Image (cartoon, rainbow, N blue to C red):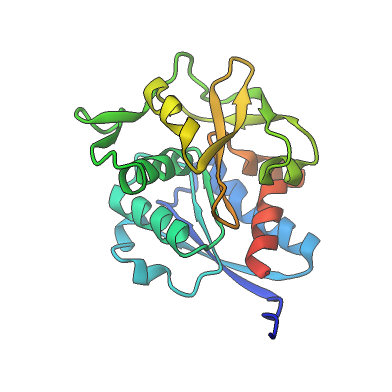
Length: 235
């Protein structure tokens, strides 16, 4: 059996509504360029506005999908399409902040059967997968404990990290309990035990974090999860 050749050029879909004033959006291209340089490959990326993403066909041909921060999205269905397409087709997926939140809602609806799964920022009815945080994490930095032997822990090379946030919403207590029995596993917690990272264990690379690790690129730091995503995408 012939092995698939390793790719030297990758196409990355950045799904979200680009805004040059959003710090994470400033950081994402830098994080990709830095990771590509470390891995000695070329990574081309396209910003795909959620309003332009109306069908899974719009994502065919991409080697990885990143559902980026800055929600609420203009077209929430576009965000769900991105998460589902990556999940069902084993395409490396990274979700940060709003991407984390909407990847969990998509999973709740289409895997766990929560057809009414909702986000408290935009929905008034349904079962809230995403609810207001007890304490705002807008422009805050916090310590995260990582589960050993997971993709995220291996990427960082340690089991405790510090990263920054820009959010007011996180996983609801009701949905946190639901995650205990499924394939979407919690792989990162804050010091109070609140969920900060998840991975889909049946997928080669499906990682989502509430924190915005990409911001490290603005300070000239490596971004381990972006390196890990590109590594998975080239294989």
